[in-house]
Image (cartoon, rainbow, N blue to C red; front, side):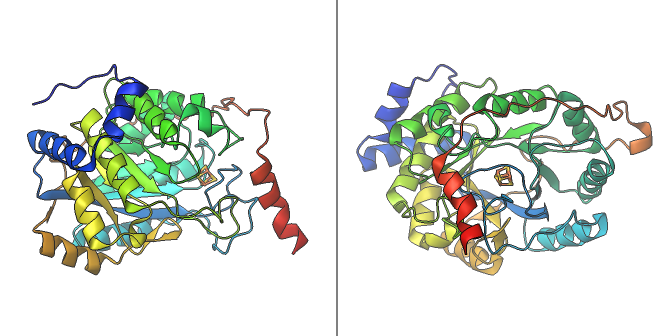
Length: 363
Ligand code: SF4
């Protein structure tokens, strides 16, 4: 086993990222085999339980209320609907359901109580449950843990420096605070980012420093390629090449050897050969289902054909960590505190995001 280091520097990570491709692939694949079965890939289904209308201004996101995109918003799904979707995901080979709500942060109240019920319901289906609900307080994270949550997703998105060019409605620090609140529970951490948003390679390395120096490192790191959605401030950004994705996956694998590296948004633009190279470079998790929240994703049947072709097997649930116990709402040790935390609202604005906001009004 290679050691887990928490003292990576940007220079070291950059020198890995920029290695000759064959050397990079060999090193990443070697480390991958020391820590994981190279023929097993974890399959998650991402479910948008509350779509659109988000008050944030993430420059890549079609769910931000201020931009003028074609997505159809919906209120919070019912527990029954979520259960039906989870059963369908299980039948098609997913071991994890990740529920996403377009919220700035979790608010105590009936909607959060419903989400807790969804977590309990899916955990009882013997599937791993993940949520991505925005910022959470420690008490909220504890309540999710009690309900049986397996993982909480909260992406750093990009480097601390470039963050200010992507989002102005919250600060990088807020992301780290939420991750630290989740870490105080037994819920695992899923946190990664997006490449291809106009950032420099240095920003990718800085983001990996921020993730790899967490102790413990995140159990799961999604690597997304920007899907440029019309109406968002990033609609005109050209897609990155597959080689950048492979370099990012391989570097992530080398600096976070035990982590599940997740191929996330942008897979529809990748060939099977490109995805196979990513698996070889250390990716061992994908999102299945025809939608990733609101952006397109390969059909699950196509993914299963790719698995067959490559001799890959979907990972069984709870292989990496035991199934959490579910505590029923009435027995909960952690009650709603009705907190109103003051998450940061930075005072800077991003010109590109402001223009996208105004563009729709002039149509
Ligand atoms: S990424 Fe999340 S927080 Fe940002 S605008 Fe979209 S839904 Fe809101």
